[in-house]
Image 1: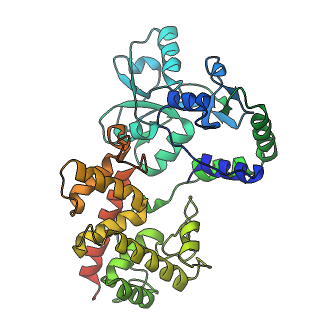
Image 2: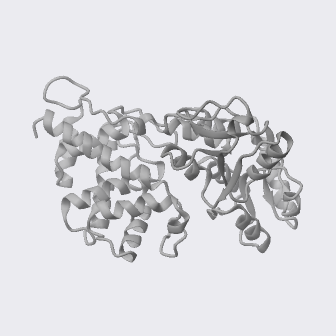
Image 3: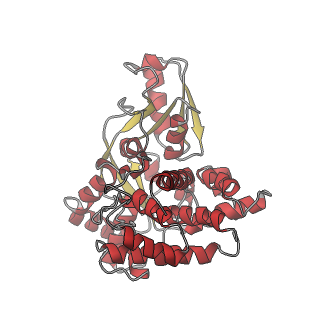
Length: 396
């Protein structure tokens, strides 16, 4: 799910090839995988660089990207590089960011420290948000996307001007390179700009930002869909106000809601989930609720044996609904490994939040890889907060 994935999916369909994705956290590992035959294409926004020409052949440019400094709006405003004197800037290992900053240090004779990290740019941005570090560097598109999730990010200071970026194929793959370049040429004015706008220019789902419960109608009701929600809740064995809290969090009771990632309807089901659980018209509130309830029942069955207590299991179900049960299961396995109580959400949630830390997501037990697990933890917390409000305001 994402910008590169949608482009690769279209490319693979055009070439009538199967698509296998390998998510690699370290760029140097990607180069090694490419040249050992582990992968055929590196679909990262790689800036043209003389050293990288030795690693493979660049495709035609996919666009231009510039690099920005990412800090907090609470930090002093940067007006010149001298304002960073004595500070430390953390950058992702293997990226071009370190060399960019070194050139600035040398040319301007500014004394700041550059620390490389194995963490992804987005994980470093999260550390800026949590005030664990003061500065990091990211491509502008990544910084913009994260600024829609996190209030208070300052991404205005440029590290580099716009430069062309591309994908990379092996030097012994001229036919693949030609096919990729043909696809880029055919899509550079339509599909690629549309996808770039979808993921990096449009504001993301604002649901992450708001936790204030509301009722869409007056009186002892939550929404115009209360009767349908109550019916679905009976199938689940849930308090109907809990299911209403989930619907609120997902769509604000808007039947036509569509997220940036393509989730649709009252319960914001992804296309593959819509198909799997028999929803033909996601904008039909009854269909959307019915499909969502069937998915929730599936998740309930998935967690039933491992988490027998109902109220605890509901938290696992909600997190799985948000981030996918594979990621939550990874956290469950990590909790088991480290001796935590795997039947309590509070202890498993700690390991889900750690799935953005390479020490944990590179563990052989982890099958689904990197995840912004803290967002799912917050998601569960927000729904339960709305539920408490509904319990106080609306009769069962």
